[in-house]
Amino acid sequence: AEDGIRDVERSRGLGDVYKRQDESKKLLNYLKSDQRVFFIEPEILQNLDALDISESAKSIAGLFNGKRTIRDVVKENSEFKLESLEAIIELYTKDLLVEVKT
Image (cartoon, rainbow, N blue to C red):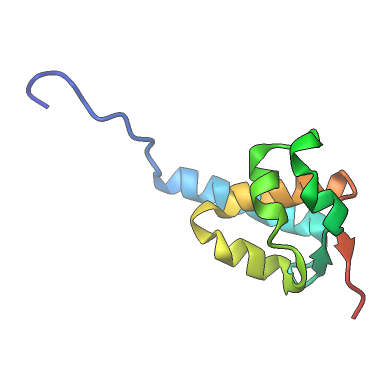
């Protein structure tokens, strides 16, 4: 801008896009399959604020209802795919997700 003030917006150049895609693939590999279905026990859902988990994990936790796959949950948050996968990994590693056996 002529006045020297510029909008501060994070660039999403091609390199950044590839880096995020690579990170997403690594996270999905950790989960073994995006077709796995999980739920979170109702008592845990009711007490999310008491848990030591990120706000992202808290916001996504309710989407695991025993019917949605990991892919479904990520697709619902498609604008934030990498962040969604990170939140899912957090819930998974803290043993808050219970897998539905099909």
